[in-house]
Length: 348
Image 1 (tube, rainbow, N blue to C red):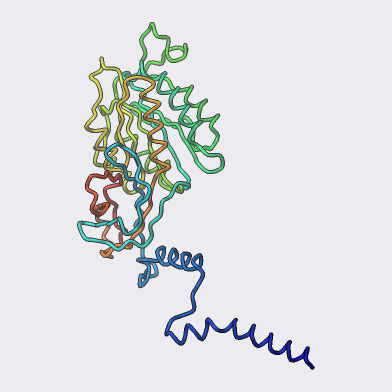
Image 2 (cartoon, rainbow, N blue to C red):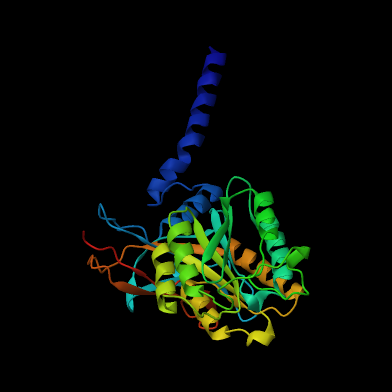
């Protein structure tokens, strides 16, 4: 009997100790204390859900997706921003951000668009070498795609989209200038190729064709690396037409302005405009090391992006162009790169 009494008393004491915090909490009007780790987890989840509460997407509504990156005055990437730091406007009207994330792993589709007109004769060898190194460094197996397109009076697809770096390198080795001097013997010792359209460059037509025919339906981020002096002499389209086509296809242009100074130099203004309007950059290398640095910067840009999405408050399906502005609140010293707008869907 003594053993039974001792057992019952011990059990009662243990039970009292176990439930004491519960009654203490209710007696003081407080909830029982939670472990710090669980509280931190709940706070993190609340932060992640901030801004989503109360949001609803209408069935059939279209979200506008905007990739962008942010750099400071030293050109260093700013990778610590949150949804609360960003504001987006459409036609100068604030929009509510539906989703926001830093994205480094989306597939990338890259079309290297190379000017082979006479003004590129002496720079093509280093362009080809740097382009090969770029593809070898950037393309991830079974994820990214690349293509090689040359242009002068018309565009030629030397290598269709592929993830095979070897095929891209072989295509680059087949790149030849349309006009070469008799003494040069062409690139890498091959016979010169003479074009009946010598000096004719359809730059804007080529950008339009690559954006609409090659890249438009590809997944992830779509990029044109444009290697040219920027001088257009024979396009049927205007620069604005080419830029608008990239907006429709959500293509980013990175311009590399390079060419023979004897042909009049580089049109830096046009190359800067096409890059900035689409969310890219323009580079003007003077030597092969500069060219490698430009390609390296492009690689970094593509791996250091944020992506936001919003549902436009203007639901009119009129096919009109809508401007986009992405800003970092209270940080006018930061540079934000993004495409300048999009075309609304049109009622069929």
